[in-house]
Image (cartoon, rainbow, N blue to C red; front, side):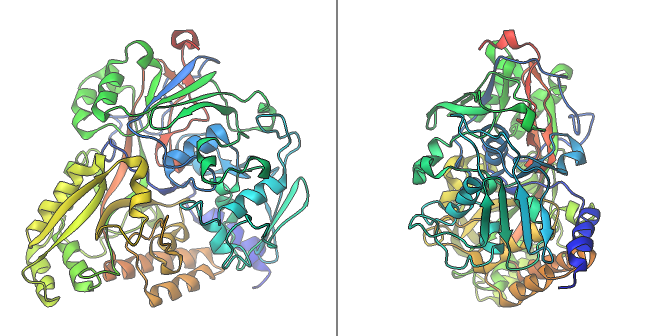
Amino acid sequence: MDKRTRTSLAAAVVATLALGGAGCTDGKTAGGAGGARNPATANTGAVIGGTPQKGGTLTVLSDHDFTHLDPARNWVIGDMDFGTRLLYRTLVTYKAEPGAKGGELTPDLAEDLGVPSNGAMTWTFKLKKGLKYEDGSPITAQDVKYNVERSFSPDLPGGPDYAARYLAGAEGYRGPAQDEHLDSIKTPDDHTIVFELRKPFAEFPYATVLPTFAPVPRAQEAGPRYDSRPFSSGPYKIETYDRDKQLVLVRNTHWDPGTDQVRKAYPDKVVVTMGLRANQIDDRLIAGAGADASAVPWGKLRPESTPKVLTKTDVRARLLAESTNCTEMVQMHTGRAPFDSVKVRQAVQFALDREAILTASGGPALGDVATALMPGSIFGGKQPDTLGIPATGDIEKAKQLLKEAGKAEGFATTITVSNGDKGVAEAVQQSLGRIGIKVTIETVDPSAFYDTIGDTKNRTDLVYTGWCPDYLSGSTFLPFVFDGRYIKEKGNSGNHSLFRDEATMKRMDEIASMADARQANKAWQELDGQILAKAPTAPVVIERMPLLLGTNIAGAFGHNSFGGQLDYATIGLKDAARAGN
């Protein structure tokens, strides 16, 4: 490629993309969907509580365990936010700022944002000096290489697969267990790591924000058990972790804030209490009594709890609601009858009452009806109405499509949802029932949700889930949700429609090779409509993230690049003594 790629393409990406996305799978919780958009009903782009004091115990109230904390497997937004802000550091990270500033990159383990060469096919990062793990041992470039390599292991499914998509010579690689290593990752010394890519990738620094690019020393390797005890390179380390009950983090005394431009590490301790009921969490935070004054929620405020919050001025002042930049979709198993028929899939698109689904998600104050696949931010601010389907559906058109597919009498099927989305599933069930499709609902605990729907042989015909771009580029949305070449039998992520379409994959490759970022942006937008017409999924809702905070919380804001989740890099307490230690 022309040498202009090295400079002009990278510059064009920065100039053209409205930087600052959300990350990956949206992380299903029991809190419903969305958050208030109106500044009169919630705080958007704001920091609540002023500057925190040093010390005290921050409590996180949750209805479920983490999906994964192993950095090789961590690709759910909330888990990524928690892991990369508290437990481990990555080569590059997002700034800890609300609004659009939170989408800007800043060096983390690395001294800078990486140096491209060879037409953006080679990227070199220099690690800062003085970086240490929780035991005081040095963090090395070889440790970053090792974690990237272990992310290929079939025993560690579910993590980000940028490495598999872009690293040269990665085809067929299955991790370092047999002392096999990737020649395309070079570590000429302890402080230098070089990545050689199979094709130009000017956005590569954004990929290095992901947990795949955190360090793991080989001596600490524990395979799947590493999930329960990641070795800390961040400001906190795990003191205890009782699955589905409680995680306790304490300070990593070897973390040097002088090397860290992002993390403030205000609390002395972070305690995640799991297994609570979602309505119990909401009620405790609304009351804000005792230790709950120093608590924050893991998941979203339930739609049913919204009136209790918005009608009380003092409580409403503690409500955050940032955009998640995520599209929620009904994804259909395109490789299994009857959903191997495009007519059947289109019938589902036309039958769905997206207004009813939005109501089940909390109503128009808590989200928007989706009219395209990618969020509006990738379209310059607003989704196009690609198919022109009424928000309440078009039953006659849906019935006609079913008739053309030879299914005029309808059929029976099953949908899998996270247990917090049962109301949404019931809205889907009622919508499809209008055209004779009888839907059985299966609910799954959020911590097991992605493992369940990622089992491609045993999953149901329909699943309800979403996707959030890792940053605001079509390259982080459409290829991950619709490229059939990366479907896995176990730990499948993103492409839950199991869509394999040669024309679509060919076009993705063509767009990825475009040197002009504006041309590529326009092409991704056009491809969005082309895929939607083939109906592998039915987009329904664009969410926000309503989070109610305790009265003693300070430095809190919803981070756009983490889907509106709290930024754990800066959160703390107004009065550290009030929470205890």
